[in-house]
Length: 169
Image 1 (spheres, rainbow, N blue to C red):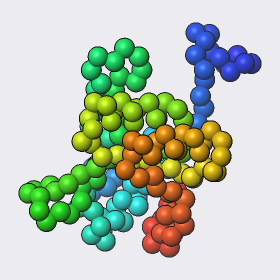
Image 2 (cartoon, rainbow, N blue to C red):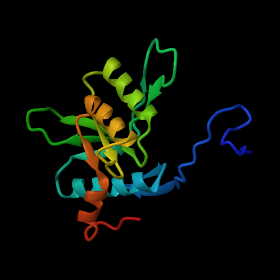
Image 3 (tube, helix red, strand yellow):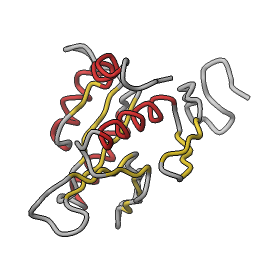
């Protein structure tokens, strides 16, 4: 039960993102996406795969643990792992990760900082539902994320461009 001030009985702040889980099948494999945004991004990745832009993708395949960290986060699971065509690489080629965020909060940046500290060779891209304005908390968080992510992608612009090719929800 939630109190008026937004706290549970154990005094943890309650966050309500209104995410709706989506279950879908891609290439004979069932995925349970944590939000419609992640599902729509998976549709876009499938579109990229069909057009030959990427080799293939998977959803939440890896968990990274941060050794000797006393405070949260102590682990991180990126949303998507993408493999790209790279003629110089054997077998799977080169891969990188993408993290989808409808709302970019400070805890996400802490995960990126820990990833950079413990796994500096791992490449991460941040996919935002909307790029925040140039000033304010959202812009500051984006500036911090830019230090640790290869790039920040504005999903709303991509979704506008592919609307006629991919059926988004």
